[in-house]
Length: 305
Ligand code: CP
Image (cartoon, rainbow, N blue to C red; front, side):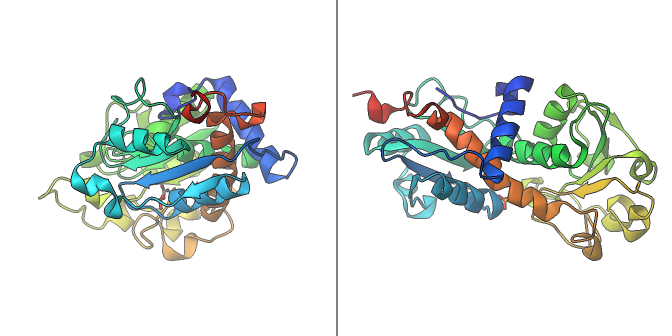
């Protein structure tokens, strides 16, 4: 079963294959379609604009039938478990589920039990594998590869699933990952050195900013005073960046906090490019999960009667 719940599930070769498939889909070189009617459902237990909408666009571009599913109007409200929800969807003919959930590793208990592929669209502070893949695609388009690149990830590291997924995979791909941000939001489990932002902007090829995830902060945790001036990408810091360097942010963006308002759409910003790439990466991930590129859906419950 081709679940995708963490970037740890993927080898470097598999990442390269997914990025190549995403590029082929972007250029229209590959037309993947299911051989029989194929249904997917997107289960979002947390708010989302980019991930939910780009999965839905990806699904429709692939010719998949998207089953509307709103957690707030579903039997989750009557206490139905996540496992029972997935198996109910499988029983009525859904072939794969995309899930975002506030609980870290919500998928752990499900992987060996569910009968349809599960794609993780973000779990708490855990992993965001499709965000990582779209970030990698954006970096690859810019620099042609990852070996030797310097990437500095800045901000609310402890609460960021994007930082976790990107640091792990970028390191495997040969980039050097640095971190910067307030001491109180550091995470020593992340693989990389902590650096001063004023210096890092001068040598980084990629400055990747993170949203402050207030919804994941403990009650009573104090805001960091003067965040933008101390830890944000100000216009002054942007002027220190190399000509070839780019700015990334998974978004949503707090304009004027992580990044100056006028930099969000500046020449070196790839923030909206990242979103565009999300559609093609998610098409590639769905095709892999449903084995569409092999002309079928061999692994899904629908065909196992
Ligand atoms: N980057 C990201 O995951 O955005 P959404 O929360 O809007 O999906």
